[in-house]
Amino acid sequence: MVQSSLATKSQSFDLVKSEIEQTIKQAESSLERFQENRESGEDLQNCVDYLNQLRGIFILVELRGGTLLCQEAVSMANDVPVGANDDKNILLTTLSTALFILRRYVEYYHQQREDHPELLLPVINELREARKEKPYPESRFFDVDVRERPDFCCDLTLRPLEGAENEYEILARRMRLTFQVALLGILRERNEVVSKKLMSRAARGFARLCQGAPMGQMWCLLAMVTDAMLDRAMGFNKARKRLLMRLEKYAREVVYVGKVATTKDAPDSIVKDLIYLLYRSGSANPEVVKVLGAYSLTPSDFPDSMLDAHARRLYGPGSDVLRSLSEALQEELNQLKDKLDIIERGIEPDLAELASIADALERLANTLLMLDLNRLAGIAREEASRLRKWESENRLPAEDELYRLADSVLGVEDAVMQIVTRGITSETDALASASGRREESIYLQEAIWVVAEEARGALTLAKRAITAFMESDYDKLHLANLPATLHSIWGGLEMVDDPKAAGVIARVAASIQERLLDAREPPAIQVLEALADALTSLEYYIESIGRREESNADLLKLAESSLADVGL
Image (tube, rainbow, N blue to C red; front, side, top):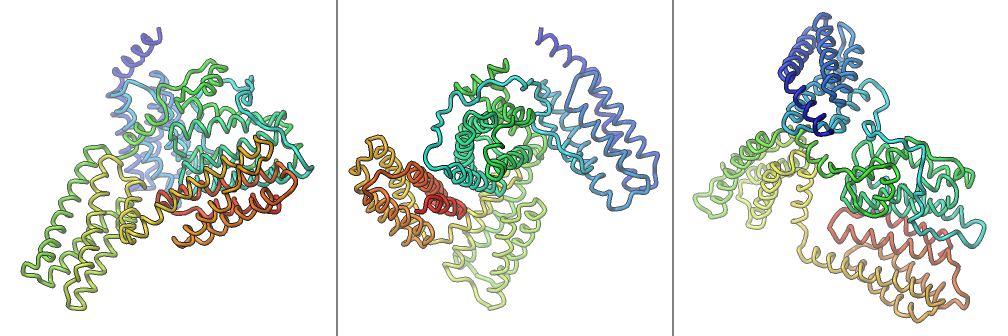
């Protein structure tokens, strides 16, 4: 029956496809004429009429995304007055973009025969944000009633709080800091894997603080969501970042309001967004399937990875355009490499060639800049400047200078070749950083890699040793070698010029010696938890430098805070 309905819907669309395309074209033409002549109220009204006509058609053929987009576009057009000044340019540009994306979506639906309205949410939200309206959540097209909720915490093992009265406050502050470090990493688009792990840790910590209280359900659900996002390599779009920023408000309340904040229920809107992320993950993990089953849902057969791939097709240039662009840039780079080869071989070297190569690099930089590939453009401009300098000094480059120039050109070429598969994205531009790191000493890179590997192993060993120490009724033999092992990591980190991380390692080693090995009484559970948190934060920090990514100093601050909370 569903297949029959889909077939009927598809046939209905085929009957009106040409009319939809023609109407979109007429709306674009009317808008373009109005942009050229802002006093032409007739053209603006025609654009509104065409949008309303499209909305009616989309309602008939049941394309929900198209219907909502046209509705928002009409509201946008109505906000533009006749004789609009330049301050309305953003509205007109956003409206023009929306019509272009709508045309692409009509082509997409005709090819795929599947309606995925969530693909249109980014441009719909751009229309709303341009009008200063609140953007829709990612679950806008997700139909589920979350008023009846299962127990989201039933599959999470949460140890009850023990010890002193102030343990709640100490743990609450530490978990909020953990949440903030994770959120900051996500907003700055740093190592997403580490940020997800930190978010999961913070969510479990808050669930522990709220144990048995209604708000704990939200934190348990967030822990489940972050685990699924980590498992399925899901990214963070604007809507997901906004959701996490909303959750930070509840983390703040746990700290500043106290236990009273844990007694209220989480809003249905947040729970719905989190359930949607579980659904969209496509994860078949038992705990995810159990939660979705409570709402008569199964994991999506159009998971986040497929959604991203389809969005790239819809919002980015077509693959044929990307291929043509890549080939044109590669052709220019090939000419550059030929000229460099002539200089390197010493075949009739001519200083005039340096100016010619510099001109070519500057043209390439301008092209990359227009494509918003700023890092790659920066590399091309930097090398052009060096060539100008050599020309002014009336000399040819030395062998090492020439190799550096060739290396930069090859780095840009590598990124240009990947435009076809990656698209014109920040990932493509980030390849510039990888090429920049080639300038570092290969021996230093190798040393950092070896230190990171050794440190990861030692920190994992340290966490296991502390766990065994607790489970064996505080048998100190499990910890006997830890201070010496951690001290060896301290030496490695000092050697690769990372004194801050080395300082934290030294502090952890000293704390284990003084508070666990030398102490006569068993340590408080809060001390062991603080050490475990500090070791985990260090492990995430080491993971980033081991991958040769930019180190995240916030993780070191988190480790220091964990130790300071219990006077270590």
